[in-house]
Amino acid sequence: MLHLPKSLRKPGFFMGQPLLISDLAEKMTPIAGLRVRNNNHPHGDIEIDVIGQRPGEAQDEQRARTLLFDMVSSSA
Image (cartoon, rainbow, N blue to C red; front, side):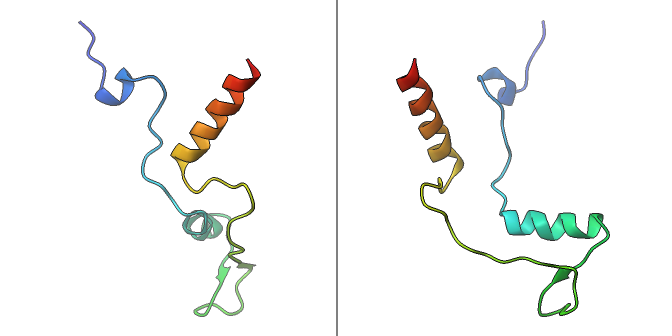
């Protein structure tokens, strides 16, 4: 008998813990051979500018999923 992990028993997939885009950018920039420009590195290659939430942008994954489901359901 094949036993699936709990995360695979439900439809869909598990994305893991939420991650800030700025944290991702700070981790990916050195991989590209660049440095983030900040107070510690004023001559860095890339500056991360937080511009805030845009109109209509979902605040979390669940809200985005619900909005997408509503759009698909209403078009069917």
